[in-house]
Length: 227
Image (tube, rainbow, N blue to C red; front, top):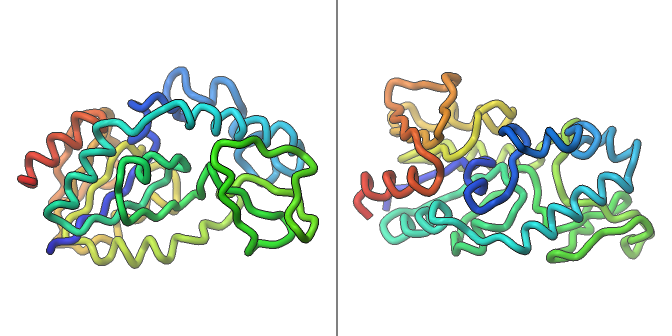
């Protein structure tokens, strides 16, 4: 069974109604990303950061996986599929995908500022100042912020290196180190890049551009791979 590795970004979930940071009307127009998505922002104003992620958690509860998410599940009928996602939502899980690695954390989980091993699933509940772990550490979103290391990167590289087919969906390939993962795919592995505005960053000789959003683009991919 051939192994498809899929790298997904914000565009994967945009058609479910989740705002991206970079697009027109996106979150950057409402928030300064360094105020709400960096470790410095957390130390500066914990209440603002918690409010931002509480809002995102509420929104996540109201949206559903789109046809793009469901199409990736369809691929599992014929292929081994590993998803490496830059997204912190749970839409891949809710769609039914089985093998998912979250590079930048998970919105529905918290971890302790005092005990790094304390990670808890809170679903769509709010986190407030004063919510602490058993050791007394303030709970924070289980998100990898700007200024923090990406703990799952080594595992992601190992997965990418085992790809027979590498697929990129809905990412600008502008955020590192995640954007470098395509470079670890074997040279002979065909690459499919699904995005309405694909960047010129990582064109390889064996790359095929599918210039569509996630829903239509994954549909095209599924048809090409004859699932």
